[in-house]
Image (cartoon, rainbow, N blue to C red; front, side, top):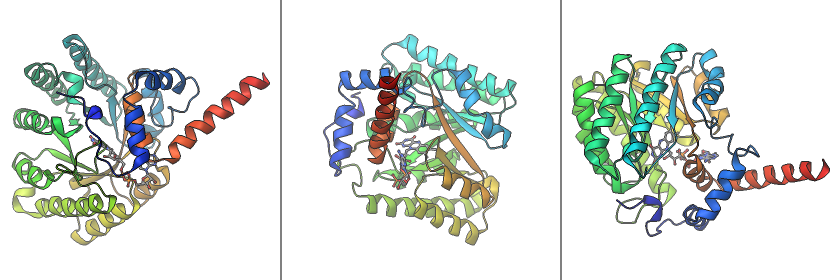
Length: 330
Ligand SMILES: Cc1cc2nc3c(=O)[nH]c(=O)nc-3n(C[C@H](O)[C@H](O)[C@H](O)COP(=O)(O)OP(=O)(O)OC[C@H]3O[C@@H](n4cnc5c(N)ncnc54)[C@H](O)[C@@H]3O)c2cc1C
């Protein structure tokens, strides 16, 4: 399958297009990989390159009894061995969380487990991770990647959820198909993480304007809340994964009105983004989980975060400038 970052561009935001284009240029990504951790600008979004660094970074969350989702960064692996290594890494993360008594689960990308190379292998590795998590009374959340992978991802989620009952999946509000996907998934009751969507998608597949994506996010949230209230909705769980204050206010108002219980929903946000909103949601007493990525293969994730907010580029440039001034004055 083609890498989603290499598809024809259709996004309406020119700066976003430029960042997606730069993310396909090896010299740019290699330069960012060389400088990002050394000069610290990647550390705002990424909890280090090793599991030990990530466990240190999440200590404040666990001290505050806030659950986390750990993601070992990686996608579109090139060999089966890399896919197997990713499986080993996730099982190790689950063990480490248990040993350290940390309330946390894991988020996995299926192209990291070989979805591109060998779908049956990917299914069997995902099964193994879900079974290991189930044995530790834990759960896994499957990230959603570009639309080339949506159908294959949902099929694997359906299989694993039917077998283990501990899988969740991200559903992207920018995709036209998501309303039908939510209906399709409901009987199996995987935890659904509703996100806006982070990849470039064509006008045939996805809403392009922020206003359209936001309107669909509200619609899908209502659809999921309606499902929660049905007699068949027992056991469903919805994760509202956004940093958009208007959508968070909308969700909070609906949660209050429908008198949802804390076991039925949670808010999720990414490490290093809108800490003010994270605190706000927590102080209102809502369940909250922070998504914590770590690992050496952090550049694609970092580029997506840059593309979402132009101000992040000036943050990178300011860090580099400050570091170069320090170096010159030493
Ligand atoms: C927990 C979690 C898991 C996710 N999993 C997936 C997944 O599996 N698949 C997928 O496609 N996408 C995933 N995403 C990303 C998501 O699709 C969006 O790309 C991302 O969350 C930005 O959209 P937003 O909802 O925050 O709204 P936006 O409208 O983009 O942003 C709202 C506000 O949030 C702040 N903000 C947003 N992004 C940034 C940023 N990068 N840097 C600084 N401030 C920012 C700004 O203040 C902005 O005004 C996930 C997001 C979260 C929170």
